[in-house]
Length: 342
Image (cartoon, rainbow, N blue to C red; front, side):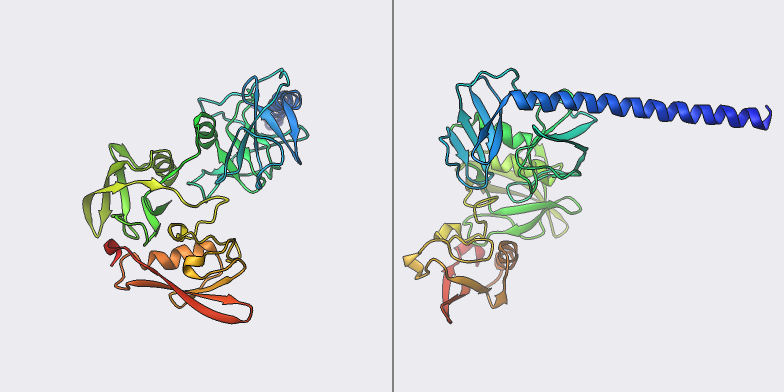
C-alpha cells in the first residue's frame, strides 16, 4: 500500500472514531437531560433546597439542620428527611439494581457527568464523586434511577437511602469500632468505653457471622443495619492468628451530623471545634466549655479524640482524663473505663 493511501485511511479511521465518540457523548448527555427534566417536574421546593419524589405521596431530601417544614421522619445522623405532599408527580424515582456505566450528578438546574471515587464507609465517611455536586443533586445513570444523594460535601449511598425509607424508627447499631480498607478490613478506631467489646486496634475482620468482610463499606453497613442488643460472631486476624469472638451490638450514639467523640455513653456532646453543646451537671461541664487535652495529648478534632481514646482500649489506665477550658481557667474531669478495657 502506498504511503499516501495508508496515511489517508488512517486519517479517515481516526476521524470516524472521533465522530463516534462525539455522537456517543451527545447521546449520553441527551439522556441525562431527560433526567433533569424529570427532576424538575417531580420535585418540590423545601426551605432552601429541593426534594424529589420517591413515591406518589413522599419526597426525599437532605438538610444539615432540622427542616422548618413539617416532615414524616428524619435521620439525625445523615440528615435525610421524608416529607408527605399532595402534589401529583409525573415521575417517581426508583433505585438501581445494577451499576450503570455512565453516571452524572443531576439537579433541576445542572447535569455534571462523573464517577464515584470512593464508597461510603459508615456514618462518618460519605462517598466521593468526581464532579462537584450541589445539595440534593441525585447521582444517576441514564435511566434516571437513584444511586446516591449529594449533601454538597459528599454522597449518601443508595443503601443508606433505602434503609432510611423502609425504617419506621432511625436506629443504627454499634460494636465500638470504626474500620477502613488497610490490607484487609482493619479496625482503625476502638471505643474504650464500649463495655464487652472484644475488638482491639489493628484487628483485621475476616467474617461477621457467615458473611465475608469484603470491604470496610460493606462491613460498616452490616453492623449499622443490624438490630441493637443482638449477638454476632466474628472471625478476626490478630497477632498472626485467626481468632473467633462474639460481640453484642448496642445503639449507635454518634456519627455523621451527630458528634462522634466516643463520649456518648456519658451524655457529653461536642461540636466540630470541641465546644460542649449542652450542660452536663453530673460531670460539672457546661455549654461552651472547650476540650483541650485527652490523656495529656492536645486534640483539635473529633477524629483526634477517637484516635487518642483508641490507644486506651488496651492500656492499664483505669481512668480517661480530660482537660477543659472555661472563661480563662482550666479544669479536669475523668471517665471510668469498663473492666474489659483495664
